[in-house]
Length: 375
Ligand SMILES: [Fe+2]
Image 1: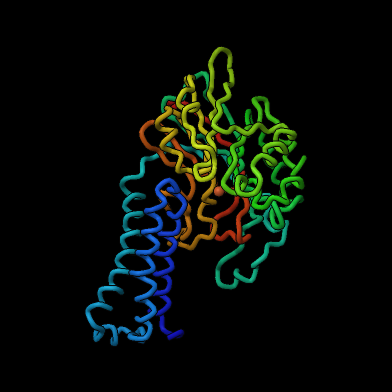
Image 2: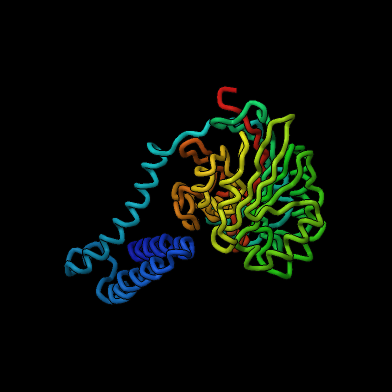
């Protein structure tokens, strides 16, 4: 059995379906019943029959032909399900995904091979651990309805640090130095600073260098709120970073206002969209840890939403891309730019993550320069 490629393919397809379903568990926590039903469906429809399938089939193509119709239905169903997921993603990429006009001004990799990465033996099977291979880039983004008064606004986004054992002090200091070097008008940090409560006091002063003319703002992520949201908020405030929890701050350029809106995490934060919907300004940016808050960007008329959370998939495969993307839209929301209606969403690939392994998915610090379309 172990030596049969079809056995491994079947396991891979089952794993894929499991990930597809579990990605959605907790995503719509307010619809928890659906998730439990899905899980029961998976257990009843996949796992238990698979256990019996292993006894009925030796995973050779010739034996498959002689299986009874029930097993043929199960195995074909598993294949078709995953095939449909990939086809849906492919069609979306090719035909339905709306273009976002961007221009990469530069890209560099200043820390490659500076810090030794764990799991380095994986390079022998083609998977370099890029956990410390930071990509620093500057990208112009052309936004619909972006007011001329705010044309050229630059911000540096950092996300999903998951500061701790692997995203250690030296690496974090190097990241902050790179970010500072980009000299933006504004710093934004889109959550998941930590994974464990013990790391909150240790983080004090490490982000202090992120000072910019228009300030430094943050939203908290699910991991922050699991660990110690209020404690982290205090540490960040002491270091000059203001956390927005369903709050709006107004920035000024002459008389023109920009509403910088921060919404609490969609899983664990307080659900209150009202302050965001009530914001009044020509230019609006929504900070939301999870890309699933995109509905709020569209509803509030924000030209741009900045998110993280999905880590670009973190562990990605050539051609296949990522398997685990904890967003309602799954792999579509792994990373990069998405546009719907008049709003653009940018999903940052983040810095850290558990396990401390990133393949075909570099961590990033990015400077976005916001331009009016046609400008
Ligand atoms: Fe997260």
